[in-house]
Amino acid sequence: MLASIAIGVVALLHAFFVYLEMFAWDQPQGRKAFGTTEEFAKASKTLAANQGLYNGFLVAGLVWGLWLGDGGFAIKVFFLGCVIVAGVFGAATVSRKILYVQAAPALVALALLLAGW
Image (cartoon, rainbow, N blue to C red; front, side):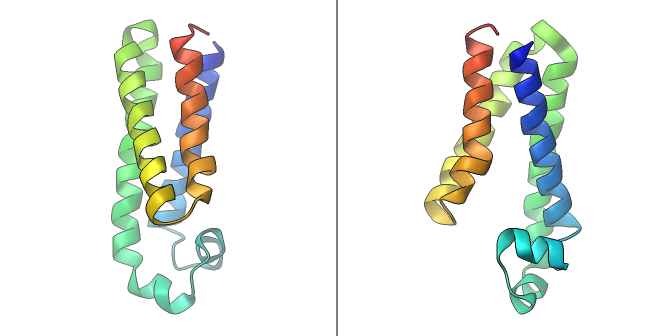
């Protein structure tokens, strides 16, 4: 039960990332969230939307795993692993903040899942 709640939180976080990257990237909320200038946001809007779409696939995979219940164990592990890898890569290449906002919640959810919680 705790693992499912944690996975749901990770999915909700990524749904919010989808919104920020696909729809709010060049708006004040999106620029504030990512610390970008208006010029950069306008120039990179298409790239951000693409990134948001990928986050949407992570959401879909996590929700799919939750929907399958116990039968979705491997799917949950796979998609949480994808979130962790993306978070670590983002932390190494963009901002350390990504490690805490993206990878850490997924790591907690994965640990709870593997522990059977």
